[in-house]
Structure formats: C-alpha cells, structure tokens
Amino acid sequence: MRMEQYDPSSEITVLAVCFVMLVLLFVSFKVRMKSFRIFSAMLGMLIGATCADLLLHYLMDNGPNPPLALFYSLRSIYHILLFGILHHFISYTCEATLLGPNSRKPYIRAATALLIIFSVADTAGIFSGRTMHIVNGTISFEGSAIFTVGYILFVLLLAALLIRVRRRLYQKVMKGFFGVFFISLAVLASARIRIQSSFTVSTFLFPLIAVMYLLHSNPYDAQLGANDLRGLHNLIRYISETNRQYLFMSLYMRELDENGKTMSDELRDLIRHVAETYFRKSVLFQVSNGHMLLMVPKDRNPNWEERLKEILKEFLVEYENFRYDYKLVVGHSSRELTGKSDYISFIRSIHTRIPDNTIYQEQPGDLDKFRQYEVILKELADIAEKKDPKDPRVLVYCQPVYNLRTGKYDTAEALMRLQLEETGLVFPDRFIPLAEENGYIHALTEIILSKTCRMMHTLLSEGYEITRISVNVSALELRDPDFCSDIEGIISRCGLDYGRIAIELTESRNDSDFLLMKERIDELKAQGITFYLDDFGTGYSNMERILELPFDIVKFDRSMLIAGSQSERSEQILSSLASLFSKLNYSVLYEGVETEKDEQMCKDLCASYLQGYKYSKPIPIGELRGFLTKG
Image (cartoon, rainbow, N blue to C red):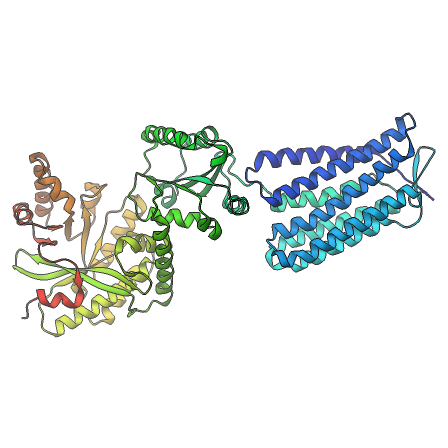
C-alpha cells in the first residue's frame, strides 16, 4: 500500500492558467471552428478535473466525514475527465490537420474504445477498493495502475496519429509536440514514483499550452483588430459546414499595397469603427496591406441592408479625410465560392473590371465572369511559363495611325488579344490587369514584341513604307532589372533597327517608379527606340514630371477631345496644352478620332498624328498591308 502525497498549490496554479487561456481564446478568436470548440472543451475538462481533485482533498482535510461514495465519485470523475482530454486530443489533431473522414475513423474509434474501457475499469477499481483506499484521511493505492496504463496507451495512439499526419504539419511544430509530450510523460513518471499526485493535471496542461502557442497564436492585428488569412480559411470552412449566409464587404486601396504606405490612424480608426459598431458577430480580415474584408452573418443581422446603406454613406463622408483611391465590393456568400474557398479571387476578378473609387454591388452574372477569369488566369500562367514567342494564343492586332505631315499611314499601334479555346477572343481589358497583378505581363510583352518585330521585318522586306510600330508596355515591367536587355535582344534578333519600334508608357504616379522610368527611357532611347506618353489627360497628370521624361510623342486621350468640344474654356485648355508640347518639340497624337469634326479639331490643335475609328478599327496585323504604300 502506498500513501499519496498532495499539495494543492500546483492544481490551483493549473486552474488559474486554464481560466487565463480561456479568456484569451474567447477574446482573440471570433472565428470559432470545430477545432476551436474541441480545444475549448479540453480546457473545460481540465478545469473540471482539477476542481474535482481539489474538492476531494478539501473534503478529506476539512469536511464533516462525507460518505466514501462521494470520494470515490470525485476520483472517478477526475480520471474520466482526464481520459476525456486525451480522447479529445485525438479528435483535435484529426480536425486541425484536416484528416479525411475515412482516414480519421480508425483513430477516433480507437480513442473512444480506450476512453470507455479505461473509464469503466478505473471506476470499477476505485469503487471496489482494489485500486484506491482512504486511510486516516489519506488516499492510498494498491494493485494495478489502471490510469497510468490508459494514459500511456492514449499517448502511443496520439504519437501514431502524429506520425500519420506528419506531412500535413510543419516539422518544427511536430518536434514541438513530441518534445512537450516527452516532458509530460517524464513529469508524470516522476510523480508516480514519488506517489505525488499534485502534478498530474500539469502534465495535461503542458500539451494544451503547446497547442495554443503553436496553432492558436495571435491571429489578428492588435491595432486594427483584423484576423489573418488563416482565420478567413477557417471561417469559410465554418460557412461550408453550417450553410449560413454571409454578407461580405471588401475594401481595396491600391496605393497602400503597391507603395507599401502605412495606413493612417484616421483610416484605421474608421475601419475598426465600422467592424465593431454596425454589425453583430462580424469578423474583419486583413488580406494584404491595402485590402480589408468584413464578413457579416446575415442571420445575426436581419437589418443588414439598412446598416449597409449607413456604412456606405459614412464611408463616402470619411473618404474626404484619407483620399486613397479605393475599390469597395459588396457581395454575398455562395455555395460555389465557399466550396472552392475562393472569395479573394472572386473579389479580385471584380477589381479587374471596375475603375478606382467605385462602390460595386455583386451582380447576377459575376460568378460566370469569375469562371472565365479563372480560365484566363490559368492560360496566362501557362503562357508565361512557356514563354513561346510564337504562342498561337497571343494575337497581334494593330490600329493604323495617319501621319498628317506625309498624308500616309506609316505608323501603327500594336494591340494584344488572346484567343483561348474555352472563352474565344479575349480583349485587353479582361486580361491585362490580371497579367499585371500576377506578374505575367512582361512575358506577354515579350511575345507581342517578338511577333510585331517579325511582321515589321516582313513588311519592310516586301517593300512597304512603314516608319515604326509602337508596343504598349506596363510601367510595372520597368522594375525588372533585365527589362532593357530583353527589349534590345528581341529587336536585334529580328534583324531590325531599333528606330523601327516604339514603346508606349503611361505616366508613373510615385517617385521611385518615376525615376526608374526615366532611367529606362534614357537607356533605350540611346539605342534609337522612340517613346510615346500614352493616355495623356486621363486621371492624374503631373506636367512637371512629364516634361522631365524624354518622350517623343504625346498621345492625347479621346476624353480630351470630348471635353474640348463641350465648352470654349475646355477647348482653350486643350489648345494651350497641345501648343506647349508642340513648342517643346513633342509630336502630338490624338487617339479616338471618330468624326470629321474630331479630325478638324485635331488639325487645329497642333496634331501630328491621328488615330481612331474614323480611319480604322483595330485589325489583325497582317491586314495592315491594306493601309500602307509601297516605295
């Protein structure tokens, strides 16, 4: 017979730690998946087991001699709850590692069998007096250590499960779990040898602390209150399991993403205020530095439509304080998006179709467009990976440009199209933003430049008079250190003079890109390549910066023609700008010329070149021969 040694201070400490962990969990985690609920249940069982053991020893030391059945019941509850924790640990590991239903079934069944067998055996041993006696107010043990054997078998089952799912876990996490369980076993063995039961519950607390630290570490930005993407994936799984309906609001600010700016305190306060105030049980996620996503359960917010109107109204008022360009998308959860866990991609597909500073509400056809978006994105990835300069999916169209000085079509702008099996002909507005966002744009530029150069070489060898063809380049491509060498290499391999190719660029908005653009233009102009400033007059324009860049031709957007025809004041502004560029030795090209009236206005406003549907719509580049003359 062995007398148990007991000190309550250890169990009181465990109890306090458990409550602290529960408080932190319920404050931190708004997305409470099944794994979260299992973990919370384990903490609850540990609290229950600790309280049962504390009460047992308190009654022994201070109680009015209650019946032995109460002591035996408390001891049985204590052990059953500890076995329950081990059983739940098996379930938690299966859930946290996303082990499939068929794969997890043997482990869950084995854990349930161990729970039943050892709970019944331990309880029978306690009540029969074979494994526990109370002698003079002290617990004594004799016979087989049923609890210890059950504990070891549970740990072995868990170790087998961890080995089974080892490829689903980061190796350092695996090592962390095994290390904690080794320490727990060592403490338990030491306590059993010394007949000291005070530390038993500690050996169950250690693995729970490991889980909380390794798998449930702080999931949100403390200042913004936004969860990370891991939390979003958990919520999507929860939506799939419960089939609940959610409203989502996505706010994207490109400037914060592309330029790495820090979010202002005012904007952060506004986003946090909206997330905390307007909806019950809403969850805010930070997708990237400039992309926030608010998920709102509709069943907890039956007045969500009214609240949404209030939010949008407040947002437009507060927008004047931070003035970042934004795209705000409002939509609803759907079975298709939930099943694919693809809300972010769906929202990004909408971003590619809407202009800045737009509030967009999901439309019935958006899912169909998203399916096409996925097809296009997959094809773009394949095109970029193969980098085939003759890729048949990339088509070169062009629009002839009329030279007022020569009275001929002797230049043209190359335009890109995609011809895909599943979608047919795809226009640039549907794939260029995708290519830019996903890093595929330079591969497309290399292909269209290569095809354009080869056609230019063919036209010249056939005797056609053509000065140059311009190719559009994204400002994002200039960040590639190999950009200039790539462009020069393609032109030279096609046997062309560099002056036969022109590059069209739109204006850069930030200082770093502006300096890089100037450096790239200088390098390629030294080889003889001509540069166009594209889309002048659309959105933001900084004349000081434009005049610092060594462009050769300025392309006035059609919006400038429309504005100039609407009022005398607008026409005077347009005339002044065109005159300024002309006096500074820039050639002026007007695009979007559609009527005789447009043409005459352009001629009166220092035009050198004219481009638009009055002369030709975009055509396959092979049809350009019909506009050229032979020398």
